[in-house]
Image (cartoon, rainbow, N blue to C red; front, side, top):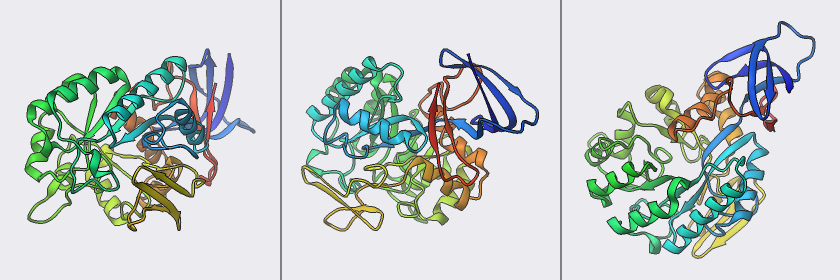
Amino acid sequence: MTTISCKNLYTGSEKLENQSLDIADGKITKIEPTGNLKNYDFENLAPTLIDLHINGGEELHFTHQPNAQTLKDIEFSAKKNGVGYVLPTLITSSVENIFEGLTAVKSYCTENPDCGVLGMHLEGPFISVKKRGAHLEKYIKIPTDDILREIIDHGGKYLKMITVAPENFTNKQLSILVESGVKVSIGHSNATFERAQEAFGLGINLVTHLFNAMSPFNHREPGLAGAALSNDTVFTPIILDDVHVAIAAAKLTHKLKEDKLFLISDALFQNHKKQNFKWDEFDASLKDGNYINSDGNLAGATISMADAVKNAIKWLKVDVSEAIKMATKTPAEVISEEIGQIKIGSRAKFCTFSNTLEDFKYLEY
């Protein structure tokens, strides 16, 4: 058994002070107050951060190279920012590439049962041409019942999330996805307010990177953004970098969504090491801290989850406990995983950080 102490314990739901944790066989067995100690093992301890939308590691991109090496790179790179659970994202590409990605995730998780890869997020190919963003138009498809069932069957429990444009689906097809157990998210969509609300009524309660690549809010046509903001059941992740989403829009979202708001990175690559990237007709170069394609458009984010937490505290004026919740307990709730909290029985996977929020680190027992 191992015992550790911390001055500030952020459980994912609340902040506790002066706590000790007993850990045995990789799980938390006891949490209790210590009283004031002269020295603590950790100043700040929280659940390891969770990133439900991440595209690459420091060197490799999952859609480009959907294999174990890339998954390892994503995990390794994310841990440098306190992230212990990731949902690697495979964007719009060929059906063969999609199956290759699902097979890679299944094999990786089977061979590494204690890893932090939660499954795969399939972002496309059933999306809007108009709202495709940096996704390649030639791979965008209109769904058929057969191809949906084929993807579901091939992915099994490892297909954790899929992003779709509901205007290109029948209600029956959306129900096929919902009833399969995969988490359905609406994104890269030009859906009207009415169509989005209809889709939410079928059991969908998530959008993909709020405001980005979706029909915007307009006073005469509120669009998908308006439907997400006005629906109390819908979770709304944001890329909190003041590039993909302006601070003012993020503040408004926080006021409207409260505990349905959570943080993602949508990082094309992590830790600002990859300078240039090309896959098929997709290209990106790191310029002034952002990935830009040859058309001058954003081609992916560079933010980390640690950055997102710090920005939430700074820009949204939330306390540390709430910012941690946006990166732990809430995303875990979205995908129905028993992670994202520090409690008895939880796996001993943590992030630590200083009071200045400058050095998020991953910690595992």
